[in-house]
Image (cartoon, rainbow, N blue to C red; front, side, top):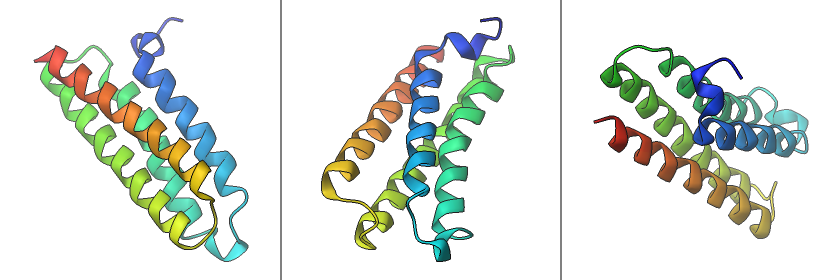
Length: 117
Protein backbone atom coordinates (compact mmCIF):
# COMPACT_ATOMS: atom_id res chain seq x y z
CA UNK A 1 0.00 0.00 0.00
CA UNK A 2 1.58 3.22 -1.13
CA UNK A 3 -1.12 5.84 -0.55
CA UNK A 4 -1.87 7.20 2.92
CA UNK A 5 -5.62 6.55 2.67
CA UNK A 6 -5.11 2.85 1.96
CA UNK A 7 -3.80 2.40 5.50
CA UNK A 8 -6.82 4.08 7.10
CA UNK A 9 -9.25 1.60 8.65
CA UNK A 10 -12.08 4.07 8.11
CA UNK A 11 -11.34 4.13 4.38
CA UNK A 12 -11.33 0.32 4.26
CA UNK A 13 -14.66 0.18 6.12
CA UNK A 14 -16.13 2.80 3.79
CA UNK A 15 -14.94 0.76 0.81
CA UNK A 16 -16.68 -2.32 2.24
CA UNK A 17 -19.85 -0.29 2.74
CA UNK A 18 -19.74 0.98 -0.86
CA UNK A 19 -19.46 -2.62 -2.07
CA UNK A 20 -22.44 -3.66 0.06
CA UNK A 21 -24.50 -0.75 -1.28
CA UNK A 22 -23.53 -1.66 -4.84
CA UNK A 23 -24.71 -5.24 -4.27
CA UNK A 24 -27.94 -4.04 -2.65
CA UNK A 25 -28.86 -1.71 -5.50
CA UNK A 26 -28.54 -4.51 -8.03
CA UNK A 27 -31.79 -5.88 -6.60
CA UNK A 28 -33.72 -2.61 -6.99
CA UNK A 29 -36.49 -2.31 -9.58
CA UNK A 30 -35.44 -1.03 -12.98
CA UNK A 31 -37.42 2.20 -12.55
CA UNK A 32 -35.03 3.18 -9.73
CA UNK A 33 -31.89 2.95 -11.86
CA UNK A 34 -31.61 6.71 -12.46
CA UNK A 35 -33.10 7.72 -9.13
CA UNK A 36 -32.48 5.85 -5.85
CA UNK A 37 -29.94 3.39 -7.27
CA UNK A 38 -27.78 6.14 -8.70
CA UNK A 39 -28.11 8.43 -5.68
CA UNK A 40 -27.33 5.72 -3.17
CA UNK A 41 -24.31 4.41 -5.05
CA UNK A 42 -22.90 7.91 -5.59
CA UNK A 43 -23.33 8.74 -1.89
CA UNK A 44 -21.60 5.54 -0.77
CA UNK A 45 -18.79 6.05 -3.29
CA UNK A 46 -18.45 9.67 -2.16
CA UNK A 47 -17.56 8.56 1.36
CA UNK A 48 -14.66 6.51 0.01
CA UNK A 49 -13.54 9.14 -2.47
CA UNK A 50 -13.60 12.07 -0.04
CA UNK A 51 -11.55 10.20 2.54
CA UNK A 52 -8.99 9.36 -0.13
CA UNK A 53 -8.90 12.83 -1.65
CA UNK A 54 -8.60 14.57 1.70
CA UNK A 55 -5.66 12.44 2.80
CA UNK A 56 -3.32 13.70 0.08
CA UNK A 57 -0.83 15.30 2.44
CA UNK A 58 -2.52 18.67 2.68
CA UNK A 59 -3.09 20.36 6.02
CA UNK A 60 -5.09 18.71 8.78
CA UNK A 61 -7.73 21.42 8.34
CA UNK A 62 -8.08 20.53 4.66
CA UNK A 63 -8.29 16.81 5.49
CA UNK A 64 -11.02 17.58 8.06
CA UNK A 65 -12.96 19.47 5.40
CA UNK A 66 -13.00 16.40 3.16
CA UNK A 67 -13.83 14.14 6.10
CA UNK A 68 -16.88 16.31 6.78
CA UNK A 69 -17.96 15.81 3.17
CA UNK A 70 -17.53 12.06 3.67
CA UNK A 71 -19.59 12.29 6.86
CA UNK A 72 -22.43 14.03 5.02
CA UNK A 73 -22.37 11.42 2.28
CA UNK A 74 -22.51 8.64 4.88
CA UNK A 75 -25.61 10.26 6.37
CA UNK A 76 -27.06 10.49 2.86
CA UNK A 77 -26.61 6.72 2.53
CA UNK A 78 -28.59 6.30 5.76
CA UNK A 79 -31.41 8.44 4.37
CA UNK A 80 -31.39 6.33 1.20
CA UNK A 81 -31.60 3.21 3.36
CA UNK A 82 -34.77 4.58 4.92
CA UNK A 83 -36.26 5.19 1.47
CA UNK A 84 -35.22 1.69 0.46
CA UNK A 85 -36.91 0.17 3.48
CA UNK A 86 -40.05 2.28 3.06
CA UNK A 87 -40.34 1.19 -0.58
CA UNK A 88 -39.92 -2.41 0.55
CA UNK A 89 -36.75 -3.07 -1.46
CA UNK A 90 -35.00 -4.29 1.68
CA UNK A 91 -36.00 -6.28 4.74
CA UNK A 92 -35.50 -5.04 8.30
CA UNK A 93 -32.54 -7.30 9.00
CA UNK A 94 -30.56 -6.09 6.00
CA UNK A 95 -31.57 -2.50 6.73
CA UNK A 96 -30.18 -2.78 10.26
CA UNK A 97 -26.96 -4.42 9.09
CA UNK A 98 -26.28 -1.64 6.59
CA UNK A 99 -27.45 1.02 9.02
CA UNK A 100 -24.92 -0.21 11.58
CA UNK A 101 -22.19 -0.21 8.94
CA UNK A 102 -22.99 3.44 8.20
CA UNK A 103 -22.99 4.19 11.90
CA UNK A 104 -19.59 2.54 12.32
CA UNK A 105 -18.12 4.60 9.48
CA UNK A 106 -19.64 7.77 10.95
CA UNK A 107 -18.09 7.12 14.37
CA UNK A 108 -14.71 6.42 12.77
CA UNK A 109 -14.82 9.58 10.65
CA UNK A 110 -15.71 11.67 13.71
CA UNK A 111 -12.85 10.11 15.66
CA UNK A 112 -10.41 10.84 12.84
CA UNK A 113 -11.60 14.45 12.67
CA UNK A 114 -11.07 14.78 16.44
CA UNK A 115 -7.59 13.31 16.21
CA UNK A 116 -6.60 15.81 13.51
CA UNK A 117 -7.62 18.89 15.52
